[in-house]
Image (cartoon, rainbow, N blue to C red):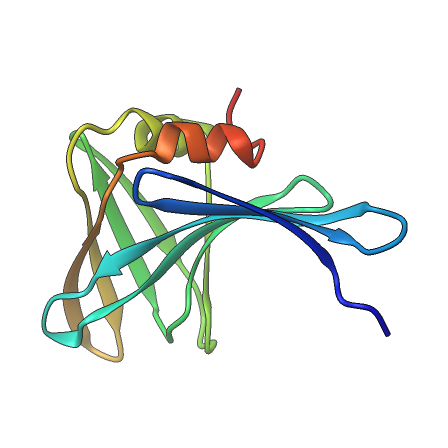
Length: 136
């Protein structure tokens, strides 16, 4: 069994990668990842993932029920049933808002009856999202 072929780069506060099946160089997925500050909890990754089929999700590696993301006065909401990893649906307006943000992007995270404030940097997000093919 061979490992995948991975191409990495960094843009501002975002790390990006394309993952290909080794040998055939068939695209598997691309992602852009930054560190999200989760207040008293510490930090975790916030990732935007573009899959082989072209679908795009944001991923937070934690059990979360609901996320409210505020970007420049716009609020984007995603909910999910119990799971160890949160997969939030992404819309074109959300991607544009993230790529054009000039300050921290704020989130309210709801998990097991708790509300947690979190944020992540938009610095480099425009280039990172272009690099993974999430925006034009």
